[in-house]
Image (cartoon, rainbow, N blue to C red; front, side, top):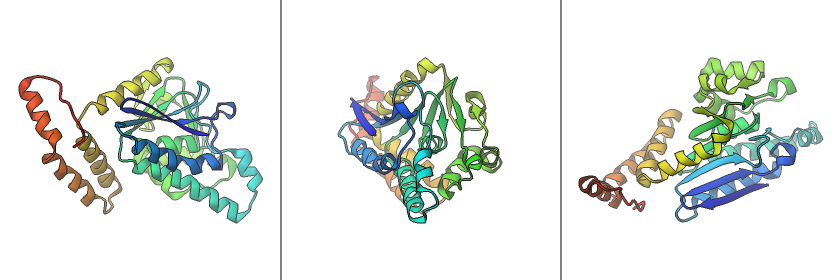
Length: 256
């Protein structure tokens, strides 16, 4: 199942199937957009952390047994691909900052989800792979595009064509993750980052995310990002930030 929790300004999006190393069934892929929407619409939540339940894996990817049962049924495979992409798109489009806390293996669809996040904190014993080429499985173009934006064209091709496992330090050099910490520090570090971000002006954070996304994707969402930037300049938070700076005190941001 896909589970959500909240703790003050932090929302947790949890891949909860530890008995199967958090492998994602079609039903779980289908449920991710709902879970993302729930957290985004929860009052007071300003940052989201994506994690796997337990300590054995972040996510083992798609449920290969389920794919095996689909066989070569075009309708079933098309339905899976639709839900697979909708889950990633919902996470990528989330207006709140999303941090992946990667503890344990991060494989296939698990890595695809992590690449939809704004930051990725990984444990030093974590491993990464996209084994599609070893399974004879095609990898969807939108997921390839996300991988390419992180690792570059040559890096993305290497990950896909070799289908090999990468250690955490190798993943860091290929920009698959943004930070590597001790395995016991993954969740505390991700939470510390989330709380640091959540303490800042929400409109400014959203505008920064929207602008980076638009510039990276080079699509027509740049105008929306520019509108968010303009809202920051006339916001109550901007006035509060200036006043707090002059008074040498922490600002009290409201997101307005």
